Length: 344
Image (cartoon, rainbow, N blue to C red; front, side, top):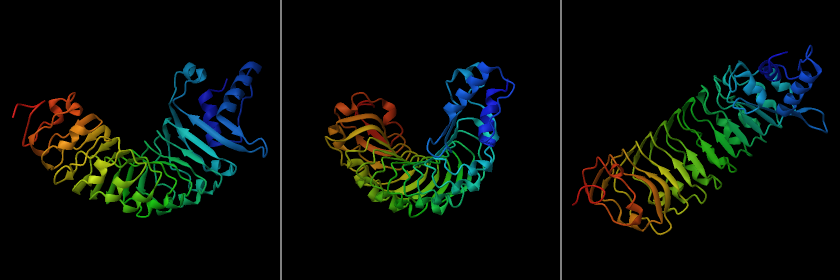
């Protein structure tokens, strides 16, 4: 019997050829049923509409093979002949390599392109913006290099963008704010440089922005703190400087804010209130000075607070948000005192 993983590779490399000849009738039926769960056709047009190949599968056929989540090979340009394709998922196989076929941008019906968790290299196709119906672009956890294509801002339907953990360089497109439908923008762990484009603040639906682990610099656009839906902002491990916008800390919708390991200066804005609810507030490893804001004691909830490795001084405020915190939250400052540190 043909190895099931080879059959899956056949779907990727030559989708029109699914060979099960020589198998017993029962095995043949099982394999065809297995294929049907991975590749679906549009009932009206009779054309392939969805290819869904996920490596981290709990399918018993994978588990029996003992190789769940691993496959080698490349994505053939033949895939571009499937011009009714709306979903292309080739995810978490760990060893699928080669480049994204440039012709992929000719698939005008494509809504989901998910290639996460492989060894795909090369650059993102320059005219990726032609995919006007694309709602999900997930290329995370590969070895993709080059710049983020300027045309990416033309993906008018895009809701989920994940380019994290690649080798991308250059700047974030200045007019990325044109992606008005986007709710998640994840570009962490690359080699991106330059500032955060101020146009990002105009993306009304953006709830999750992760730019951590890059080489970004400059100050934080003040408009980020005025975004009505933004609740997760990770900017840690970059080279940002300047002061922390007070609007980031006073925004009642902000739940996770990580600005650690940068070069932020000045004092921590004293703008917290009864609606402040932070699951994570990490300002560690910066150049902040002054006191711990007294208004922090009035916050509704602070789960994880880290102000360590700064130049803070004075008495740590008292209040319920501080009751569960350990000394590590305030360590390695200039002259902080009070619970949970030494008595003033």
